[in-house]
Each structure stands twice: as C-alpha cells, then as structure tokens.
Length: 259
Image (cartoon, rainbow, N blue to C red; front, top):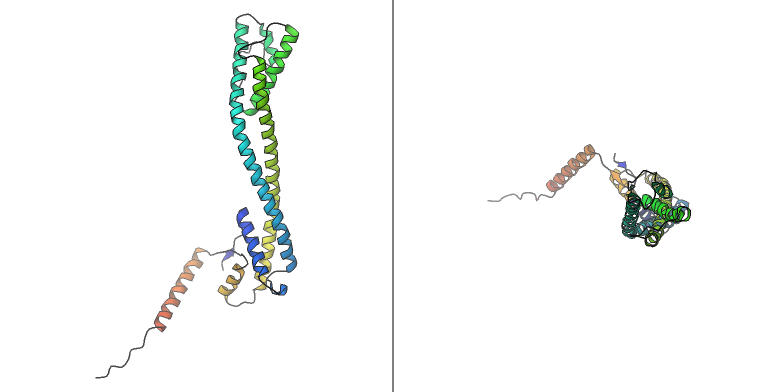
C-alpha cells in the first residue's frame, strides 16, 4: 500500500486545504461530503487567517530586505567618518596637542591607539555614540580645540542618518521575526487540520473495494500518496500485463481460407 505524505511547504499546505474545500463545495448535499461539514467550516475560516499570516510575513521580509540595502549605504559612509575621526584623535595626541587621557572620554584605554572594529552595524552604532558623546565631554571637562577633518558636527549629521536607518531596520527585523513565528504557529494548526480531513476522507471511502478507485476518490480531496519502489514496479508489471491482455483480446480472428 502507498503511504500518505503531508505537505511540507506553506504553498502545498494551502493547496491541500483549498483542494479539500473546493471538492467539498462541489457536493450539493452536505452529507455527501467526504468529511464533516463542521470540519469544512473550520478549514474555511482557518485558511483565510493562514494566507493573511503568510502575506504579512512575506511583506515584512521584503520591507526588511529593502531597508537593509539602504542601511548598508549609510553604514559604509558612517564607518569612514568614525574611523577617520578616531585616527585624527590619535594623530592629535601623537603631536602632543591632547593628552593621552583624552582617549578615555571616547571609551578607549588611555594608551590604546588602535581603531576599533567597525565591521558590524552594532559596532558602528556603539562607537558613533561614544565619540559624539566623548567629544562633548572632553571639551567640557578638559577644554582644548575641537577635532577637525572631520569635525564632530559632520560626523554627527552622518551618524544620525545612519542611526535612524539602523533603528528602523531593528524594528523591521522584530516585525519580521514576529510574523515568522506567527506563520510557524499556523503551520502546526494547518498540519493538524489536513491530517483530520484526510483521515475523515479515507474513512468515508473505506468501503470502496477497488483500491485504485478508492485512492482516486481520496486524491480528489487533495490526499497525496507515495508509492514505494517495489509497489511502483509491481504496478508497472500489472499494467503491462493488462495492456498485453487487451491487445490480445483486440486481435482480429483469422478467417478460414477457402480454395
């Protein structure tokens, strides 16, 4: 006997439920539907919610992908400004214009002259906050001239644009994750409904003696059957034998030859 295979994608789940609904809708008498009418109502109500959840998740991913491209451009530019500002800070200290202790205002150790990693968006976000706040605190507490080329005002303008895009992207990621989790929860419900429908359909047609006819009736309601290799070979052999038998039966009888 072939075995049933439940859908394993959202598209195939929807297709299975829609097929069951469509076939059930073709039957005028609700008692002639191969599964309970109350179950049909459940599927009908669920299917709309499932489709909506999938569409919301798809739209959220698309918005996130679009925002990600925008953010990448802002990140690149802001990374350059932050890196250049830190390098100029270190040059200023090397020339003796600022004391090494000035580094502590920006979140560095006093003797740490390395440019920190700025590979990730989070690192750019964190160090941007550090140097903007640090420049203000240094001037307020230690005095001295502001750092130029780039000036902190230019860094700040660039950073604020990046920051807005970064926070928007974080929100979109959260939305995408939430919608994705919602779809995952719907999948479990969809699988349970499909299993319930298929069980009822097979029970409804269980009295059909011809196996192929019984399976065909079930497939009209969306059931999917998978044949094992041995069963496939057996079916091929049976069909070949049947074709051979029909061909033989259809042969014209030889007419007697009269001399």
